Image (cartoon, rainbow, N blue to C red; front, side, top):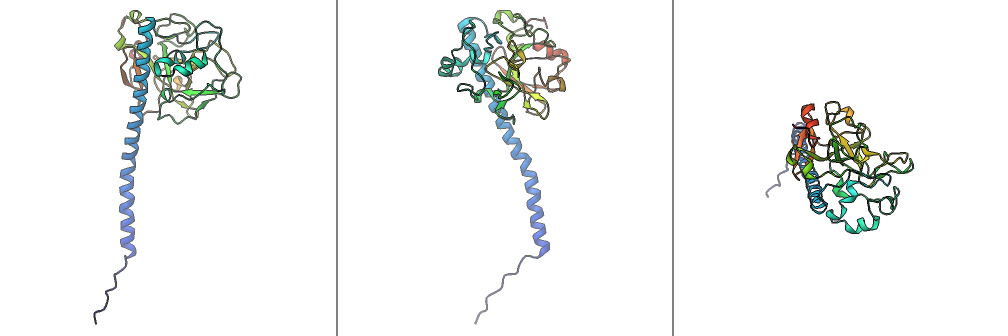
Length: 279
């Protein structure tokens, strides 16, 4: 009679070798998976900016200027003005957005203060509510990661109707005013929302600060330059930054989107933020 053969068990050494091999493979695979995921998120961020760029161009075709950076004292912003061109006409109508000062944006946390995915970088890990911008110092408005370019200064001109960049208070800048060329001039860029690192992010609906002051540009625009370099500690409140590694995505005035390295020369960076500095 034939006896069944007993299958030998793994030895402890063999088991440890198998576990070690699995551990090595996982260690090799994880960075690759993370890289693929970040590539997809960065592509989505780029697409967000392209859609914003198309909306800006459509708005410009209609009015012959880009939207105002923000309007005081109501605080409506470029992000609200282009809503119809982002297929958000119902929201635009419900908000009663206008440039005449007779309708105020809603308070934070109310019905029409909503998170719009097109204004959010998918790599950004900050919460949906940005407590840095509030009408009463308590609950914040829904966040955004995209801000207009005010210029290449230290934000001393944030109340100017003719900023060195495209967006300021009550600004009405058209392509014809961009003497350096639309393909060489920043229009919109990123700002990270990560309070652990000090980056304060932005909001899309209203130019306002935490205690309810209006005429407050840094909520929706930013500035570039030698003193306020991309992703540096000085950009946290008024400049540009990104959760992407080594730089940030920028929308140009011609509708193109490019990744700008955070090692860019400060003079070049400031020049690209200005609409007519001759560079």
